[in-house]
Length: 475
Image (cartoon, rainbow, N blue to C red; front, side, top):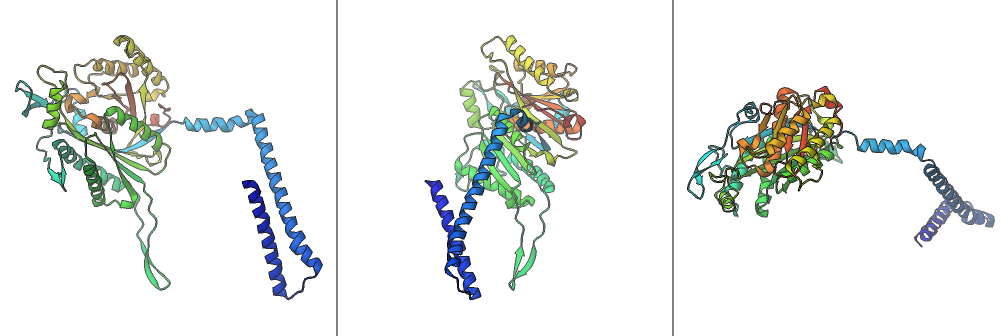
C-alpha cells in the first residue's frame, strides 16, 4: 500500500509541476493556448514524464538486481572485497601511551620504584591500626598525607569517609600533572575574531569538538551525591589547567576489582585503535587506610596479621595513564597492544601442575604470533603476592616468553610494596610499564590476574622502536 501511495503522490506532483509551468508561461507571454496546446501540455506531457520516470526506475532496479545476482553467482570475484574487510577487522591494534603518573602509599615515583625492583620497599608496621591481639599490622600508607586536602568530613552536606578523602587527596597531584600534559598536547584553539554582520559586531567562534575523555575509576560504595561532587571537582580542576570545557567529557565508573578494570582496558584499546585524533585519560584512586575497612577485613579473616601472614595488607594509591589514538603517537611515548587473556584450558578443577602447563602453552602460542624482535621482553611487572603460589605462575610465564630473562632481577612485585590497591592496581601497572619503556626503550610485560585462575598479558613497547611497527594483533 505504501508503494502505491508513493507512486500516486509522484504522479500528482509531476502533473502539478507541469501545469504550473505551462500556465505561468502562457500568462507571462500573453499567448492564448488552443485546445491542442492544452491537451499536449496539460495532459500528454505530464503523463509522458511520469511514464518515463517509472521506466527509468525499473531499469535501474533491474540493473542492480543483475549485479547482485552476478556477485552471488561468482563468489570468487567477490572474495577480494570480503577478505580485505576481514583483514582490516583483524589488523594489528595498538594505542598510543603518552604519559603515566603514580602516587602510592610507598612514597616513590615510578622511576624510583622501578629502580628498587631487586629489593623493593615493604609495608611498615602501623602505630595506629592493630589486630585482635593488639599487635600492630603492616600497612602501605602515604606519610604526611593531608586527607582533608580535597574533601572535608562533611563536604557540601555530604558525609565522607577516610578512604574517600584519602583517595582524592592522592589523586589531586596525579590529575594536575597529567592534565598539564594533556593541555600541552591538545591542538591550540584558534583565537576568535570579531566580525560585523548587518551592522552588529559579534564574535566569530569556530565549533570545538570533544576530543578528550577523562575517566575516573572508583570502587563501589561512593554515594551518588559524592560522585556528582567529584565530577564537578574534576571538571573544575581541568578547566584551571586551561582546557576548554567544550573539548572534554568527564566519566566516573564504578569497578569491583582489577578484573573489571582489565576488561575495560581491553575494550578501550579496541575502540581507540580504530579512531583518529582522540585522547583518553584513565584515572583511578582508592585507599583501604580506613579503620572501618580494616576492622571489616579483620572480622572476615582477610587482614594480614601475625597469625594470618597471607592476608591482605592495607594500601592506597592513585594513578593515571594518558592514552591516544595511534595517529597521535609521540617519539618519547609508548604503544600498548591490546591485552590478551590466556586460556588455561578450562582446568579450574585440575591439579596446579596441569593448569600451569596449559597457561605456559597458551603463553608460548601467543609468543609465536609475535615478530622475533617483540619477544625481547626485558622487564615484567606482576601482581603476584609474596609467598603465594601465583609467584610460580609469574616466573613460569616469564620463562616461557623469554628464557634468558632473570625473573628475580627483571621483575617488580608491586603488591609486595604497595599493599592492597584493588581496582587501582592495573592502572598503576600500566603507568609503571610506560615509565620502564621510556627508560629502556625495550618491551615491558604486565602480568595480571594472580587472584584468579586465568592470567592476562599486556605488552607495551616503545613508539620509536622498529619492532613495534609490525607487531601482530594480540586480541
